[in-house]
Image (tube, rainbow, N blue to C red; front, side, top):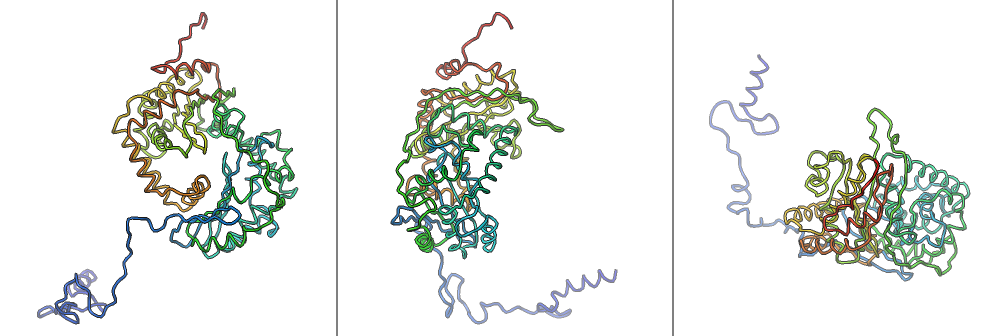
Amino acid sequence: MAAVVLVATRLLRGPGPWGRSRPRFGPPVCRQFSSGGAYPNIPLSSPLPGVPQPVFATVDGQEKFETKVTTLDNGLRVASQNKFGQFCTVGILINSGSRYEAKYLSGIAHFLEKLAFSSTARFDSKDEILLTLEKHGGICDCQTSRDTTMYAVSADSKGLDTVVGLLADVVLHPRLTDEEMQMTRMAIQFELEDLNMRPDPEPLLTEMIHEAAYGENTVGLHRFCPPENIGKIDREVLHSYLRNYYTPDRMVLAGVGVEHEHLVECARKYLLGTQPAWGHVKAVDVDRSVAQYTGGMVKLERDMSNVSLGPTPIPELTHIMVGLESCSFLEEDFIPFAVLNMMMGGGGSFSAGGPGKGMFSRLYLNVLNRHHWMYNATSYHHSYEDTGLLCIHASADPRQVREMVEIITKEFILMGGTVDVVELERARTQLMSMLMMNLESRPVIFEDVGRQVLATRARKLPHELCALICNVKPEDVKRVASKMLRGKPAVAALGDLTDLPSYEHIQAALSSKDGHLPRMYRLFR
């Protein structure tokens, strides 16, 4: 009780030694404010005499951190985007990938991805490279796609010179020792086994749909090394490929969070006039083929009943992916196709991001909400410099494959129909939101800068892309969808395919007005 009285007394008396105490008796003491002291009668809207003028950040309607691009004498492009902070992301992007392997053993790009950041002319091992990066708080990564190879490092901005020197050494002077080649063969063998055993078939289906759409040309070539080529690829094979595709005119050194002049200076120091490990021979055998869309079907019969064992196993499913040719990312129709893909949306039968995520997209409203037996329905859009592919992936019980395919074909036909203004506005807003949220991340900005400069020698800024998205009208979506539906389909199927309709029937359904498959009459069930 005494403690409570003591606390109450202190509160009534006001603060202790850190402020002016109020006396227990008599009138309160008035605090002297600045208006009645050193600066009398000066309003807050006027500057105080004797105080320096503040300098405020200003904008003139243009972004002050636009992407800067410089081309060196050897053709290499240096691109940077300023982003304030302690760390930076720097990397080299190369116009190289599995689409250029038509004249080589398939799987070279896969090998180069696994061999990245191994021993070089200056570094004896991968551990030495990682220790060098750790001094600057750095991490490294290499990713290959069908048309681009990307070596990237995120580290403290003060270590930019070290990082660019390391990247140049990794890209141009890899040792490719026998021991590293053997370890890479084992890693690729394990990855291929894992690819065939994993419950999620999306990577395998993506490979199959590209093969169905483009046959044995450009982006239809395998991104993963075929098992029969693992033992055939050696240092000489890799050098013959690197000699033609790892040339300065096919490279971009991109950086985010760095000063452009400093990055150009480092590029001239480490990437200009450098003799690569495979010799300074001019590229003479570069594949400049344009992607040829063929359409077709690729099927893989497989027992999917035991792919996911455990307390809650995934049921046996058959996976179907149906695609049609869209357009390249260099064409004006790329933005309407991106909006159409967002409008289709889709996902699993249970929302992965909490209640409501993607629930207003067409594949949720028209497919997953109406057909409880559908396990998955998702739209994907793959786009390259000379072609594109819009596809829908669906999964269901093997006994309902035919019905599932008909549902997909109906959704494709509906794409060319009337587009509701509300759903279009929702798709545009969702696309802009996703774009802007992703570009909050420094590594994503780096990849965006590098890929755009590699493809177009310039970069569209986010506000320019948002303006293009806002300009998409319902008639634009209907126009690109109608044009797409005039092409031949590409079909990939995985699992129990007993009830899978023929390619001709799927093509007929996509050419019809309602998307229905032709009726089949059977004498015996």
